[in-house]
Image (cartoon, rainbow, N blue to C red; front, side, top):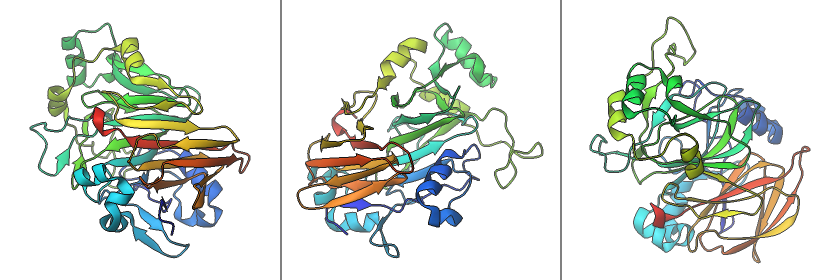
Length: 357
């Protein structure tokens, strides 16, 4: 194992019973790049927790093909060097940046994340700012982001209480490499046909809270399968109504505020709505990368082709379906990118901009 690159086990999936809306794109990608592991890759995957120190679905660092060590164990021994002194002093041996992949073949429930300090949160819960980097989108794939612009607050509340979400939600048709901020208090949902990477901010020893406003009146059996004889999922309408940020604009104005159009090599350092810095590369070339946040760790994820990351001291290669944590000690990298399985190389780097939280 190298001292600066921590590649994690790529098979950290949430059971489909917890993500009954899950689609096939994550499964297809992982099976393409890991044909020998097809038996352990489900056909339907809603969420793949790519880098996590959350106790629910923790990441394991790969030492070799047989041996793995919990990422938290490694951070316990070297948190200041790996995460950066400032991050380690504040968060300990915990990565406050959780990175997931998500793909849906049906609407996710309509959700809202509260702000930290919300009085309805329990002692072991926290808010959960998140963002969406669109990795791929099928024809007519969409997301819901905030509310339609022509409605009054009272009209919106009535539609929410009556579970008539289509009448009030703003529907947006994303394009590949859109980077969408989802701040606390913003009502949102991912629709079918959207494959995305989702960074989230989660505090140590706490679970990021999601309140569900609507699940589109669906019923499920005990295995998470849609069934007319099943039961609905729990909703949190009243909690959500008290946590909605009514100061956010609506419709096109909200889209302009929360959506960044990313391009090859472009850097986004975050803002008041999005604490997750981002840089993506998708050209088949050799290029340089400089850490997007000084003295802080970075998460990298690859969803196509093959990418070699190299410092003056060491190198590591990622293929589609793999992610790693890069130590704060790494200031600069060279990237060598090439096709694999006829797919263009694509890599994203995420870092936490603590100053904008």
